[in-house]
Image 1: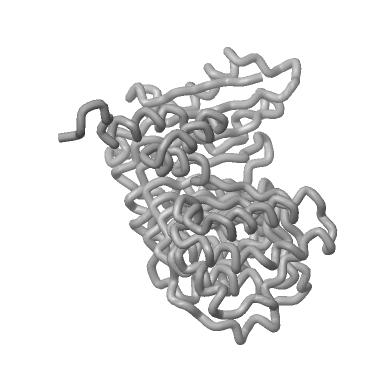
Image 2: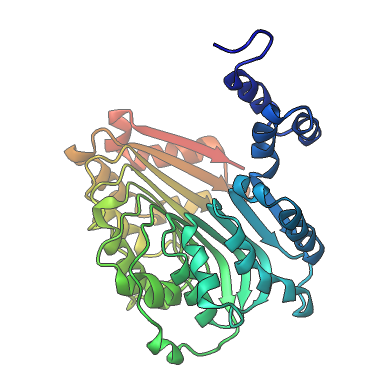
Length: 372
């Protein structure tokens, strides 16, 4: 039993939890008494964002004066508003900084240029193995070797976001000697980059016969590398339950088409980036190979330039695919954006689309939203 006049620690923690986004109040709580300190520090230092060399230096000094603060840091975001090579020198200290944060789970690199890991020792890089989530957003590396080294060191990540990542090296021919490491235990993978195929070919796929990625979000930019995308979809196989996919709006007839043949446990599928007229055969290919009886929701987002061209979309394949008995529980959500055109009347478009999808409409599993 707690002594008279002393609150149980659980109540103190719950009270301070309500102040999770009030930094001034949390700072005050941290100075009240020793019992209030851990809960206050949990919210004050859980999520750290360093935007430049000065912020980094201040944070390093804070850890030097109070090493126990490192225990509370769970997420670290690194960004640099300046884009010169000189401004990026401090970024080389990030791996060593991560090494001091023994409970760090998530590392975000945002808006960084000229990143090089050549001065980081293997011992320092090995600390990245503690990470479970890694985010790249608008990051420019010196070479792909740096990308490969960083990803290989972060060998236990379950969540990877690879958004607009590139590097200076113009040729990939020198990457043949890169070591192949065991594949990470990925559960969520987000890919949106012009160089995604290289990352997959050189880092992820060589070591992965099977991936346990349950959520896959792909905005594929490389028309000539659909085979790499298919290898990724095949490796994910039955593990993937939620898939978002957007592919190029134009494609050569001779190019390989994407396939969902191996993704039979899909529960949610979102197809985005379609333009009517102008849709390419990959849409029909995805729908034709769709065989996921547990699919609960199929969302298709498209831009209609002129309502007179609605019939150019392959509604027949879509209606035929979802009219199969195995998809009787699947709801189709159509998100239609209408371009500014005199023929584009939302009501007319909705009626026309419904007429092209009689099987789905009859089941009462059709939802159409028109915008514009």
